[in-house]
Length: 220
Length: 220
DNA sequence: GGCAACTGACTGATCGTCCAGTCAAACTCA
DNA sequence: TGAGTTTGACTGGACGATCAGTCAGTTGCC
Image (tube, rainbow over all chains, first blue to last red):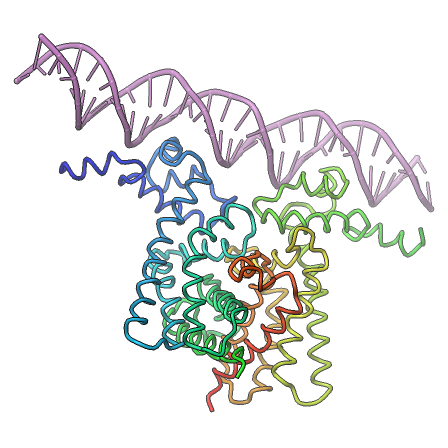
């Protein structure tokens, strides 16, 4: 163990065990929901004693928040970077904006997918919940980047009003949920034709769908 | 009490107390989720002893299912009726189909809204879940009507392929979730400009958005 | 009197949380 | 350097609360 590693192992909650807990928490929260998730199961999956969760995170709510914060930071950094990159290249195009909005979520969400879902499903339940914990976290971690993308929509489509841009963003997020929830329903409804496990194939439909929807809201 | 009413009160679970339990279950499941909901709270809100829930419904899962079945029956009957009415009038138009798809859900969902949400939020969590209970119920109560509307989409837009029609339906449902979840986020993101409590105002944006999206998937 | 509706105290399991204690590494000072 | 002290990650059993579910008993209408 290097001195650097020792130093990191000391910092709470940034050590390897704390990360293992966050990884396990992601799996269990995703498959069981917040209320349904048992801290004992998280501890077991992380290969850690039950008490260690409270040592590092205090309580269940703070564990949930730290878990969301970690992954959300990655997602929204990638979103911001992609948007900045598009701006640097010149005029914004609607298709590129929508692609930039969803690809980081897909890739981060499916990365850890096991039985299918992973972190993305946590986002879905957070987005559709209105309890104070979920609302505060959405406000903290996702509202700032939302404002950026709403502004980008208006830049790309100058005829789009402010209210329409906000609605368009909300609708776009709603469409993205279809993809992230990974329920298997598209396959069932289409006799195997559609697969919500294939992120690229889905994105190929989602992007034109949303762009068509946005342009339909533009008052010309 | 009429003989008819007495007869209904006899059938389990069809009596007035059973209905009161279902009403209370709707409220509690909506605000706390399936795992978070406590049968004791449901009994208390219904003004009924805890044991009566098990007398009428057996267990928590069956109570949940009966509750969903009751309201879903109303929603999907209205959906089917509206679609049949459109067909009877002649050629199907995309805007009318989308309107027919959502209005019954909105009206049934907001009808019982108290702190905001009601049954609609249960639908949202069901649609985005992949646990066996939610999947089976979605399959039983919502897949049949989904097939009808997917077929209607293809009739209204002949250039729309089968896979595209299924995706379009899924995306449309995703957009509808935005509206049904009633998180208050649109208002927050727009400084009060957008209100997700105003179903009619939302539907006025959702319908053109979805229609624009669907038409963007049509291969011409 | 019979039967279905209904009650509420109860059970065992499981939950989040707590805490006394272990242990190895880091630090202190002669 | 090395014995004594301190630190902090970590353990695992115990706690009270609460959960879904059970059941013997009561009620009220035919």
